[in-house]
Image 1 (cartoon, one colour):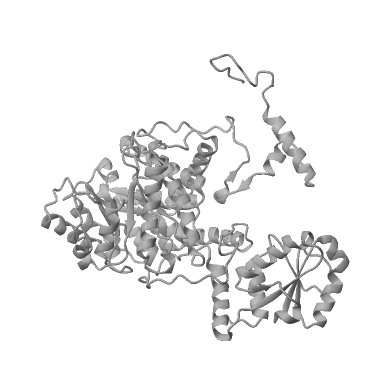
Image 2 (image 1 turned 30 degrees about the vertical axis):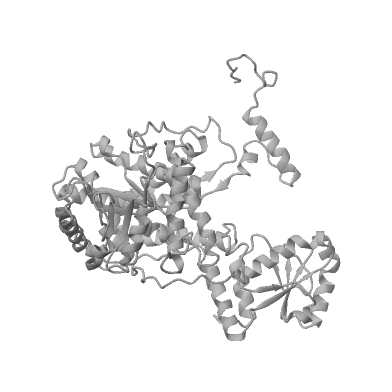
Length: 600
């Protein structure tokens, strides 16, 4: 209904309220013009977008799309935040990751906006446990929380950190951070585990330092969906609660020892909903354990490694900015922005500066943290949060039915589930339904490679690590090797005919497609002058009907070994293959490189 303003002037008073059915009728009219005969709810469904986990994004959300009451910030079920004040006081904890024993880099970060440091130590890292003191030299340990990530060497790393606390006179109640014990996460990475008991005994010495991290990144990096990432983290958290309470801690004390780590992706709404759903799910676990007030989940969000690309890495800055915004809006307590050159080796000083400044700009200039749960109340976000929470809870229940997190890791069931999800996503990536800017879309063959010092080999032996760009990276690597061996890249000639208005769209499409596989698209001169052995016809459907067959015949006579056509498959004599929006680009490009003699 129309609500009158205080002055009584209703600008829309003479217009009746539109109904949902009227909107659907208008949608049906628009779709009818494009050849789709649908009506009513089917018209709305035609505009819906399918997401993973059986979820979907509808084109319109209204008050009819109800979701459970999210409560208030700082109160169960903590959907709107674990603290009543949110991050409004100082913003979120800006946590920088350092994988090299460079104490000066750590100090530079802390002097320029970073508020805590995350240090991977020992195996799979560039920092040995014995180097911890040198890396933290000059750091005020009572002001800057330290988060360790030492895998099987967690006990030794914790002892080394505690020794530094004692040497520097840090009071037990002043120390903050996390020892990072996560035997199940380590097992997910390596296939090996370690004993948690020694770390639990150490945790009592510094009450402000949590003992355990529930790291969901291994499941995200293995190709898992948002619901699978949440479900696996929930199962891990429950396993740790059992271990902690068996060791003599109360349920409330056990909850206080955990911090959860999640991936933040460039899908901003899904990331916001994931963090909100994670808090709701953990609140439910705490409620079942009889300590509902202890269910405020502490969250550390990390910009997704899966979305980072090696080609055109500058675009990673855009991806991490969106992910950081989503993490902040989703209520993460700490956020780590991975440097844009993360996948190329050790990040340089410029990349680390951009990473920390991403959070600084969002907090200090955009004032994102000044509003608690800014997405709260959005019908779409509330509904997505609810649906994602249900999907994650169901996945968690299946893990528990199969014996718990350790059991599904060791049986291979979790690996299979994640691989199935990634296989479906890989199809979308191959068909460019999920475009990757700078890789599958708008690639730049002449870009100057960004070179960095090699990073330590990451932990392996457990779940795989996948990347969105991996299929295209393999194609580009073949092209690079061919360029190094022969002095030129594989080529295809784009034969455009008809006026520019008829061929420009498909010419651009074809050039973009072939370059995604490292194949140079030649548009100037004649086919004979191009030096190519393959050709792709580019024009309109009307001109194809008139000229495609004769053009193919002429090009074959000129020496073309393979003729493709940019457009939907048809029956044109002399045309060997078709490239079109939605085709399997990876398969098309792989076949093209094979035909062009580019070695695998």
